Image (cartoon, rainbow, N blue to C red; front, side):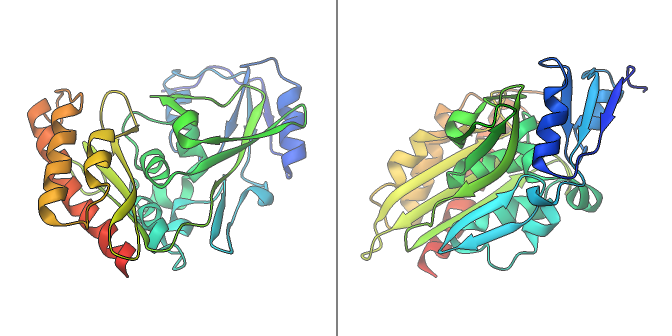
Length: 292
């Protein structure tokens, strides 16, 4: 596989230089290169034919994890491996480390980035689903100097589609300080250990002082529609104490509601079973982390 001809290459050292390099190109002509784990494959197969590449590897201000007063910000160029080994990201942010620990193989985790993953928004990907389950926000900067912040629900539009405009760069993903007694978890099932998820499930729950669930977010990976919320499960988890019977009922309802499909990896019925079995495991772990 050989890429189509690429006319221009830039390796900026700052966000300002990256946006300036983008501004010199026509809309849609250039792409940002993050870890390159997905983009380079698409370029080699000519699924993508950019005229220009803006390589973000040297932009230090896009890297790093900041936790201040409970609020979390992860730079768009922060690698999965750095997220996976950050001991501060338990409890409410456990789904992020769960997902980052099992993205691809070791080589992918040491090159791939959170920003690249959410902007690529592949149909079967762990990171967008974990970000959606935990209620992350995408912070964007434009060549005009304008900035904006979008909730994951509004940013992730569908497979390979996001709300990022051609003149924008994802700067970071952020989360407000979580409420007390909040926990989250994520797990996937693939054909082999490092495979893309046939089904992935992310869950975030918040309990009140009595142990009752007062907030629930559930997200799925591996369906034809890409990363998506699971409202049927969310409704049933609300008000519960995270007991096994309620969790089972919640994910049975989600499995019945989900638009599953059949392909070479699994048939629709098997995907529904995975939603139930994985959902049970992940929700229980999220409740356990909320209680810790």
